[in-house]
Each structure stands twice: as C-alpha cells, then as structure tokens.
Image: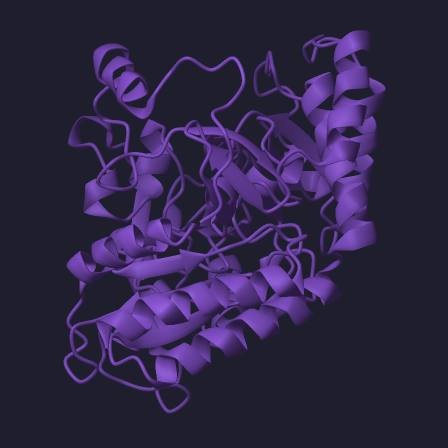
Length: 441
C-alpha cells in the first residue's frame, strides 16, 4: 500500500470522523471493515483515505465510478456547466436533458426511446412499476428471489433478501419467483439437463400467486447485491415469453449491469437477446453524479398521458446530465463494450487461476468487469463462509485493494473496477488477491 502525507488542510482523523458519524448520522448506515475507511479523494482507479493511504478501487463506489475518479473531462465539463447553470427543474427544457435522452435511445436495444430522468436507481424502478401498471392496466408485478431493487417501500418489497426488507414498509402487488442460481439450484439439477426449470417457475408463480394477469416482471440481468448470480443462456428468452403471455412487460433493471459493464453489449439484457419494454439505469451512467433513468418504448410512456402530473425537481439536472454525456463520450472512446469484454476476460482468467488452488472458492461467475467469487467452507457441501469473507476483506484492505461483497449469505466477493481500468491494474488486483487467498490455503 502506498502512502502520502496527510491531506493538505484536513484536520480530521479516522477517529474524529467516526465519532461524528455515530453522533450525527443514522446508525443504520452500513459500513465496510472492522475500522471503517473514511476516503478523501481519488484519481483514476485509485482512492486515498484521509490518512494518506492509497487503495486500488475495484468496487468503484458500488459499480458507479465507471470511468474512474476525477476524470479530467468530467471535471472540466461539469465545472463549466456549474458556472453556467446548476439547476432548472423539469419545468424548463434544457439542451443537456434532451441530448442525453437522445443518446441513450441510440444505444439501448429494440424500440426503447422515451426517457424520464430521476436521481437514483430506486426512483427509476419505482417509476418503471408505475409505467408498467399504467400501460397494461394490470397490477401485479413479478420479481426474482435474491434480487435487490432499491431503498423505497416498493423497491424494498421488490427486493428478496430478508436483511434488506422492512416489515412496516411492505407494499402489495409484488410476487417473487425462483431465481436462476445454478450453483445453489433449489431443484438440485444441472443446466442444460434441467430444462431451465427455474424459468418455468415464473409461470407457476403467476398462476398461483396472482390473478393470472401481471403488469410486468422486473429482473436484473445479473443480480448485483444478490451475489452476481448469472442466468444460463436460455433463461431470459423463456421468461420474456411467459411474462408477455400473461399480459406483462419485461423491465430490465440495468442499474448495475448497464453501460458496457458485462462486455460486448451496452446493456446486460442484450447478452440474452431480449428486448425489454422498459429499462432502468443509474449508478455508472453519470460516474457518481446523482442520476437515474427509466426508458420505455413509446407506447408505455404515452400511456401515462392524462394519468396525473409528473415532476422531478432534480431529474434531468443540467450538471448531472452533462456528467452523463461526458461519461458516455469517454466510454465510447476509451472503454467501449468490446474493450471491457477483453479486460473482463483477463480478470476472469486470473480469478479462475486463483480458484484452481483455493478450496474456499466455490464458484467464479459473472460477465465482463462484473465478476464474483462465492466463498465456501467446503466445495462439496457448499456451506457459505461469510466469516472468511470478512477476513479476506481485512487482508485485501491491508494490501491496498478495495473490493465488494454481497449474496444472500454474505459470502460472495464482488469485483467491479472502473470500466477504464488498465490491464496492468487488473493484473495488480489479481496478484494481490492471489497473495490473500494463498494465505487461506
């Protein structure tokens, strides 16, 4: 781990920051590490804490700093926009707003065309439910077990992890089907001989938990907080057909998988050849500026006409939309989906090599620069090992590497560097992980 002198002008210490955190912030804030890590600044794929320690950031603010920290083009363009106009609200048209909508329509699959910008993935998913219900005239929404959709009442209900739900905030009309968790298949079957039984469960769930008609089904192409659970090739094609047969639309939650993260395509759902009627996105779209979007085919957006007034005070904000435009320009030039696929293959090969000699890695999974390691105590029993993950976290921090974690059992390591990360940085991260896993062998 490299270290630099204390940050100029900073008088806070780790202990003083944590003291104020406990005094003035809700205790429900989830913090990584035994001793939480207050960050001060970042550049590229690296961040520094307030004590001057440098870390290679391979979690990217939860898949958000898609083109790295402090990118000069984003700094330049957003600074210029701040000096020109910071805020206007959606009551007034703005050139950045319409340009961004036009750009996103040009890279999304199928007939997706009309956008509504908000501040987060939570809001984008809420709006997607509203749009699906308005368009179809149906009420029930399907989702998947182990999915995560946000922090509001409806999106916490969409979320299928008990640890992320609040009993007092559960809302009606949301049902869950079995997810395509091949590593822990509840049927004890194997793909492809299983005939994708998990996909068929969607129809069974509709028949048994709804009135037989649905507004739609919201799915993450790769489940993020769920532990990077990646469906088999045939899965989403079958699910999309079932959803439409029962009157619903397909809602692709691309909050974590969007903008090339999975490699070769701009959006994760394209990996399965499915064209959704609604797509949501956030996180990496504006490289850390608050930004969410719900894009639909024209008919879905138009169905909301006359259904009540819509306004989003900060949606389509001139600065956030400029950040998103700059981010997309950088991605097209420096990190297109094809380049992400190549770097993802390099990362995946390194992780699989570690897994060959590490008995605690049950599975390596994911796509592109969205790779996960499921950690177990024993490969035969597949017993989750969350305590081992906690120890791995402390060791990787000591070596100057930041990673993420997730999964229903808190036993999946999530590795998601900036999409602009270099091959050398990928190799560095793999080498550091190799050192850590060797110690656990």
